[in-house]
Image 1: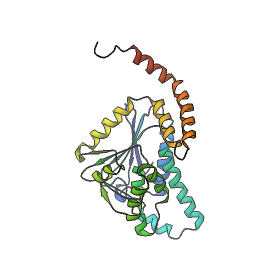
Image 2: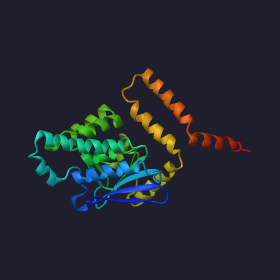
Image 3: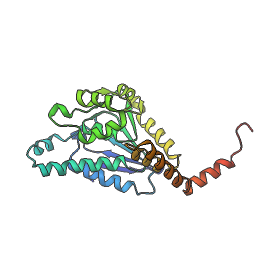
Image 4: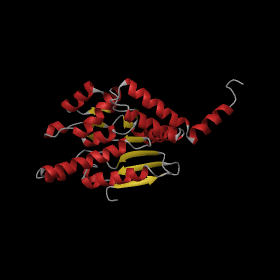
Length: 258
């Protein structure tokens, strides 16, 4: 890989680092392709329990690559379709990954970079240096693919503020509107991410997989359909080896206070 660095730690945390610091980790076709391949490999790697996305250099991800934007201006409609489908496929692979994902945002996450953080299950942001913004409308683009995920995460009113206003906001504001799940001091960011990953590792991998599927699939369902689906998925969860083992272990524990 030329645009990513991957490290799988002994505890099962896969650290995926966007490694184009000279381009502020901008989303080139090569980076998106390598990210897609990497996530698809990690989703079936039994060693991996949690995936962390981070960026090298000063930014998490600055959005589209400027040099590629110049090339894109001459694209045909079919070439633009192929390009959009690459972004959509990569983002969907991360969003539907059965393993919990954490975005470690130590600096600016702009446009597509903000979308990359948004699609992760958790976003841990630097209080001092993280910035978030969907700035596509400033240059005539629309936040099409990322907008679909943002609506699910923060709702219509907040999505309109972010997508139409194109403002940059800090970690605290992003936390208040639900875009960020955790805020940490900049020099404690690694500690905060590691503590969150360690907590997630303690949970049942099969339960996390099914819960993520539940949360993804329930959108748009009627109440009746959602309840029927949830009931069926609950039956599957109860039949897993992990569920049986964890319930047995729980029942063998002495009552608290004895």
